[in-house]
Image (cartoon, rainbow, N blue to C red; front, side, top):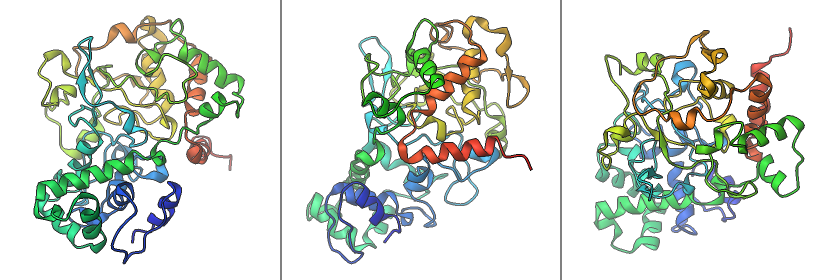
Length: 390
């Protein structure tokens, strides 16, 4: 049995399952086993949890430098071109659809190409540069190696489930999604949540950052990173789940590693098979800001390492801020947008330029969106950024 399973089952209130047990308590517990099972990758080295690790905000922290921007594949050398988004709070993204205003909303992956969690759950297993299983049938054969799975699938999906490869694969997807829909992925217990419940008092800097974030007079943050209109809604996920091109530069260091140079352009939403509009190019789904301070690197391609850099990048648009045209991570001007058309200038240019005090306050507020169990990671990051004098 996976070493994490008894602990994680207890965390979501499910009794542990013995390795030789014929059944598991429910579909979510089955999904949990699947989520941590490295046997579902070609070389038996990767699971969902490898790139969406619960101990690290449900992102991939294996890489260093440019390799931190995208996940390493099961073969030990393939590297993707997009950053693995957090699986935390992913259940709140609505099904992919077109809203009444004509904007695309929701779905899973950066381009929304899967409508929901169940749709997303099975894709990495078959992706040749991720878990690299050759077919659905090959995955089902791996599942059949585990007698617990054999009994559990029959229990939840019917005695004939193993006779139909596509149905069995769909059942696997549903089970993983059921696990991702548990409160383990969305505890809503950050300092911000505790503040709303009267259990935490914001520091003056955090309070200033919160005021700035929710004010459309001083910042543009909540134009995209806000789902509900009430500032005191305890289920705010800090994403509109819309799609925008914010002028993110290509990650040239990552492209040097994965070989996607030579004019390759990631066109974002336009890669979604349901989207055909030209103005979709370069747009990516607005991510949640929950746990943002511990889930870097940032942007769809992991081009920025530091959260403060991201805030500075947005601030360069405010009043065409002449003081914010240098990327602090390179010491050079910000890279050119990978897709220069369709940039959401209306949203990006809203609000005045911010001074360093207000930028630091915004970063401080964003840190309060960290789930309680990840707060020690904030301290570790601080220690890495500001090591003690020798």
